[in-house]
Length: 373
Length: 244
Picture 1 (tube, rainbow over the protein chains, first blue to last red):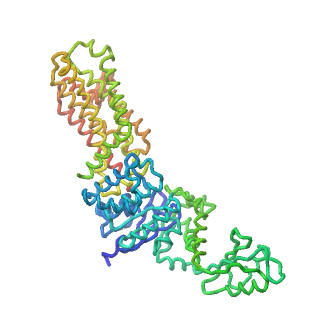
Picture 2 (cartoon, rainbow over the protein chains, first blue to last red):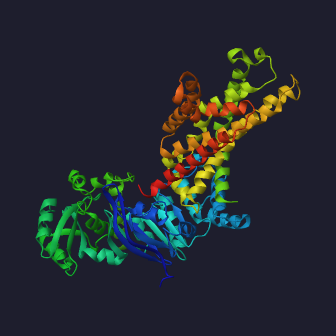
Picture 3 (tube, each protein chain N blue to C red):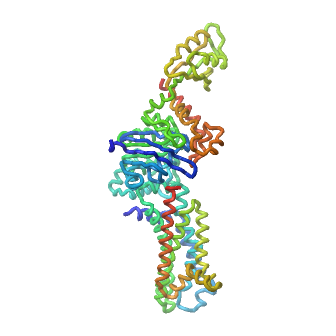
């Protein structure tokens, strides 16, 4: 057991002045697991990773990486990990080759091992064309690749990647995720992100943190089921109807759907088609599809789509990470957060990007779940 | 090679990968030439086979410009751009980072200082021989200059470790080193205990002995102490990130 646990965090707490960035965080990552570390901006993802890489120390609590303690044995810890910090900060005055060489030298790789590893790293990170280029001339996506390259150069058993896909274009994202899946077969990977689609893509297990606490930890399916709700998507034609009936107005249809037994919430979704699209939710033990079908028949609506899926990870994520603001963060801080849902993200630390992405991500998740059903 | 030396090598090379090393060296030589031959009548008016002028003007230029420019980015820039996180999470000790960066910057300053050896060599050995140059003061003068550089670069590194802004690091280093230099002039105007105190901490007063060919162990210890103390405080400043 002891040898199988690669990363272990025991009651990690980190205070920055009055702000408690981490609050008794506990988790374990076993050998060969690819774990998504999820949370809104400022939830403590980066702080946790910095503690695990011995860049900063926890205020209380302890952690071991590859059975080395982060306090007692920081050099051993760092030897066992490859770390990609947020936004891949690199020395821009060096070329890619020089940078990788530098990282390899510091890690004590000899010349022939370096050559072997370099070949492999270049292949998997797609750096062959850019080896001789100055890092300052590279796009962000390529810098991210170089960052990933330096994290892999010594073939570490553990990889800690802080938002490895932020600022990448969709192709690059897919590429990096594909790659993470590939190397994840024989390595332990802890990967932070606030993009849920990525977690679904690459990880089997997720740890969700919010406001410095772990709010969910387990296999993705388990987390999805956590809120105990099922989601339905219903699409009704807005121009045609059956058997001489009039097509319904959006408000009418919504009201009728809301009144069905078992439906807890209903809301209209945007759509490109000439149709009304609604999202309903019900308790997980009920199945309201038959009811919906009967309603459509009775009213003569043209039902274009009716599907049921477990609640999207995205919705679970929001359920879990919402409403924790007031805990231990200093009352004056959360009082200012009138718009608690998303605006609170910007309040803390250094993670300031990507709020606008939220909507896009939602779309992605929707699209994905549509594809599945 | 130890991580410390690899960091030093990288630091030293990065000066030459950017224009900074070339600009600093070229302009320093230009300025040194002006000061040596023209300032206050210049070398020729003195009519003596001595390069003491070189020792008087070089550390001043180093204090006011070269050292602040060379050291301002050492840790401040790393911290601002986040590369510090990348560097420190490699298997290196904090002390490796501090001393490695120190050695890299000191290397550049010493390249500059040692290339001023061209002055005594060209003027008094080959191709010209302008007179019998007394070797003793030259040797002790250079020893003093090297010690001075060790201390000044350490002070610059310390200040760079305390801020995230290169500009702030530059100005504070400029001010501190400038003050430590000018205390010597100030001491001659002040009197009594103040003068003793100012002379005690002034780099200029400390270097005076070396120019005259006098190697006083107190001066050597002074410069080395400043160096070690500054590096230790810089180390602590770097470690502070863990707890703050």
